[in-house]
Image 1 (cartoon, rainbow, N blue to C red):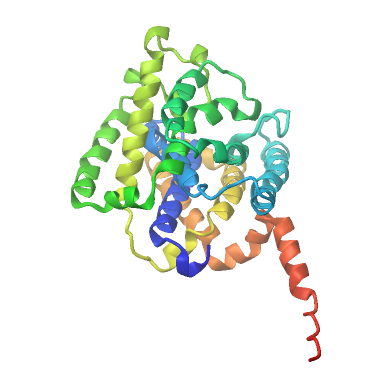
Image 2 (cartoon, rainbow, N blue to C red):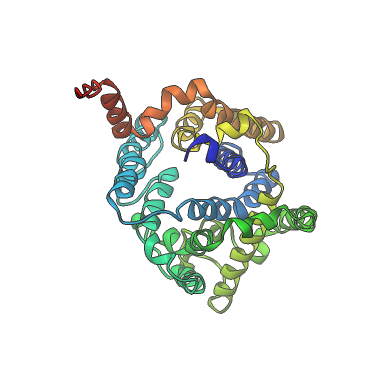
Length: 343
């Protein structure tokens, strides 16, 4: 998509959401306190559904043709094959975490989204054929909690599927309604209400349900209500996602909007920085100063997201997120232009 044809609102939304991803992962550095639990649960109640929805919305054009399959290989499959072991060995050998094999089959930490998005994209031509796939995806999501394996993050592939399918089927005119005054006014109490719910997550649900990767058998909720609870979590996630997106400015915000085109750089590299802080003993500081540690961690996470998406850093790191595409473009740029034919 050329800069002139890009929707600045989508780039703003993407940058907001990837920043929340960094914040959510960084909170793991803070000693478990009521404050850190609340921030974590509030973010995870809706930001993953929002991220998945936007991914689906931006996948509408995917088809099983050579150009798009090649793009899928370059932008998702190859980065997954590279960054999955890179982050694994960094965590194990540099940070000293007790992460375990296998690689690729069971995605580690942040890498799950690459393989799950790849699988969603592969079935996109089917999912977008009819709106009936939306209610079907809800049924699949509810049934997905019966699957407790971590292989290829199938529980998340199934559990988050409705948000992806919804993104595939909603059109620009539907999302334009998020700019209606009444929607934006309602968004504020909606997010406040979700904030209140986040303070009592373990009384009406379970934090594991927010991750969509845990089987029902491991969740301490009676079997007769666990499906209903999962559906409630999904509904809250959808409301929170739309409420938050409605508050994101529609106009271009200059440098911030431009940063929204570098979300893959932020996503792939922020984990190395966060784990570096863990290896340096930052958690000892947050344990001794939980409130200050939480504030500094959130501020630092926002700064990290902005730094990674900044033009100078992006210029250095972006080729590593798509190495084959970078090599191909540089090779094409060096090829001499075809000699003009004589008349």
